[in-house]
Length: 106
Image 1 (cartoon, rainbow, N blue to C red):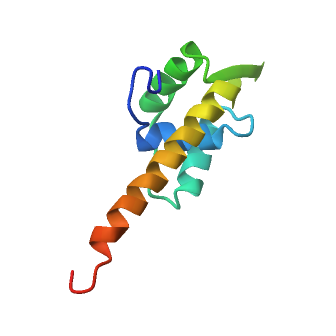
Image 2 (image 1 turned 90 degrees about the vertical axis):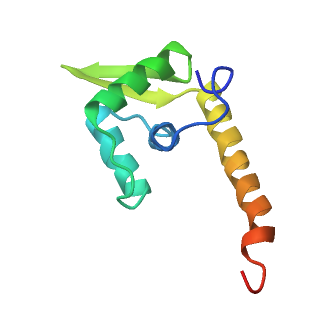
């Protein structure tokens, strides 16, 4: 999914993968993403479960266990690689923009 098919991750994708550095169920993923983003990102259930299905289909996350209706997921190495690649891409955007946006008189 993530950039064989896409060039970058959306913010929701990025924060979901960050949240899944530890095993979490859907509700916990949403809460964690909101906490990591300091309340800036809120992920609704429709978006969350659509992305979880895509991530799982692409091998970027895997289900690690379930308790009743709750399914717990964790990022895979493929997902970690994509997350790292996106992190580096975002750093590059900042570096490239800094030269233009931090000039005196701008």
